[in-house]
Image (cartoon, rainbow, N blue to C red; front, side):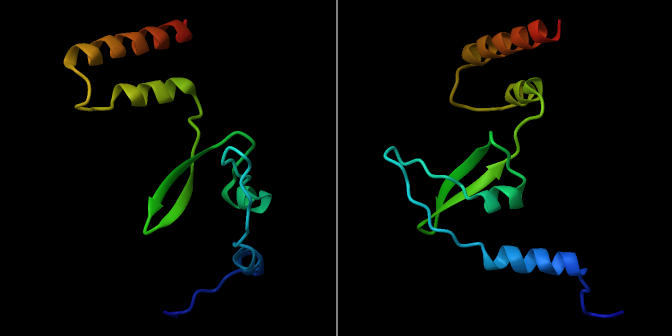
Length: 108
């Protein structure tokens, strides 16, 4: 078995094109807003409406695209499964009831 990986010409071209263009300098606007360059959005399949997860790691600002929930009810169901110690049991029950009510109203 060969230890080499053989890539198609299109795969090689994509890797070369993207790796040669992965550094861009962007200027922030007055409120700290920046524009993600189009080739970066295209490379990650990011459309016009997207979310980024921002965090600091080793003194660097990291931005990771987050998949948007395809259906808002999927997101609400995920919220119902969050277990957090920052709310009292009564607050959790109250919030859960409110979310379940919204889910029920949207499916009718």
